[in-house]
Structure formats: structure tokens, C-alpha cells
Amino acid sequence: MTGSSEEMAGDHDRASATDDGHASSGAGHTDVTFGWAGLRRGFTTGVPVAIGVAGYGVAFGMLADRAGLSVAEAALMSATVLAGASQMVAVELWSDPIPVATILLATVAINLRYSIMGAALEPWFRSLSPRQAYGSLFFMADENWALTMRDLAGGSGRGAFLVGSGIALWLFWIASTVVGAVAGGAIGEPARFGLDFVLAAVFVALLVDLWEGRSNLFPWAVALAVSVTAAELLPGQWYIVVGGGAAAVAEVIRHDE
Image (tube, rainbow, N blue to C red; front, side):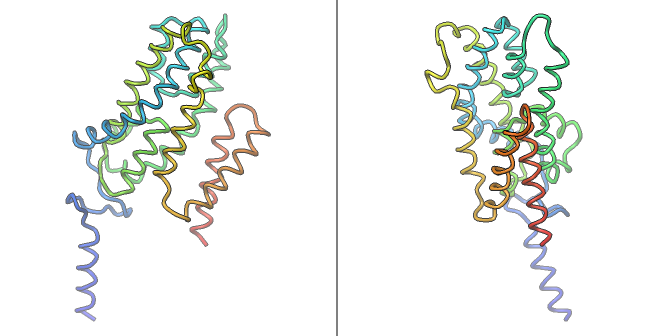
């Protein structure tokens, strides 16, 4: 019994070590460090996705121009908000006087999904300082959240990956907003160039990276069915939150069984 216990302990110690020397945390995740290597890797990984998202940024810049925002105002919104869907809704609701309460309620409803996304990062971010963790969340968007989840789930331990990929998105988002606001009149209707489909195409590509096998099929199917139904029954963007919440509940039930 003693020999078997020692062998089991040795196996456990070897299993808890990772390739880069980080020890496994009590939650079963690799301990996360926050450094330049993670930031650099996140940035280089995020650039190709940011280029795709830039098409969406051009479309936003065009809408902002039509709503009467100056180039500087549109760029400032993109620099401080970094949330494409809520920015689109905000400029679509823009009028004189500005309906502040309506815009706030609409953007809160759209961005509630970030609470679910942030909770998914908690097992890894719990080992970061509050400044590192909450500072990283400013740069969290749908696209780089998916990239970060894939990277951290793979055991990289790169806590700065979200910031690095987020900076790439942030820079391209601001630049493309300026392009759209300046050249909006010359570009014309975004749908003519397929810019309205860019974001959907980016998410389809990200789904390929997030696919881990048949185990993903059930929660994804639940999310699809519930969100499509909710889109028909609920106003605004609530279907995003409802679909994500339903998938989370389905996954919990599946694991409990």
C-alpha cells in the first residue's frame, strides 16, 4: 500500500507540472502569470482577427458619420467603449436631444453577455492581481475572449494574452472607425462590399477553433435553439444573454448527470 501511494503521489506531481514550469492550481488549471510574453503572443494572435473586425469598424464609422458625430467623436467612442454591437445601437438611437436613458438601457442589455464571459475567465484570472484582472477586462471583446479561452484552456498560463489580443483589436477598431467616418460618403452602403457580414464570418471562424468535439454539440445546440426562439419573442439583444445562460445551465445539468 505504501509503495502504491508513493507511486500515485509521484504520478500526481508529474501530472500537475506543465511544460513551461508552472504548477497546476487547485482548481485544475495551470497557474497564470502576467508578462510580456503573453502580451506579445496575444497581440500577434489577435492581429488577423482584428483585420477582419476592422470591416465592422468601418461600418460603424459610417453610421456614426450619418448620425452627425464628428470623426473625433466617433474615434473617442471606439477608444473608450470597444463594443461594436452596443456602439451600433447607440448611434442608431442618436438624436437631438440625445435619449440618454434609452441608450444606457439598450447597451446594458446588449453587454450583459460580458458578465458570462468574464465568469468563464475567473478560474484563470483568480491568480492575477485585481489591477491585472480588471484592467484586462477593459480590452475584452467577443473575438479575443474566444481566443483567450482557447489559449488558457490549452494550459499556456498566459494571463496577459487577453490584453495583448485586445490591444490589437482596439487599435484596428479605432483606425477603421476613423476610415469609415472619413470615407463614409465615398464608400456608400456597407452591404455592397459585404461589410455587414464581416462580424458573422469572424465568429464562424472562431467557432472552428473553439470546437473540442462532440461534447460541445449539446450546449451549442441549446444556445442556438434558445437564442433563435428568444430573438422572436424578446425585444432588443436579450436573446444573446438568454441563449448563453441556457447553454450554461444545460452544461451544468449534463455534468451533474
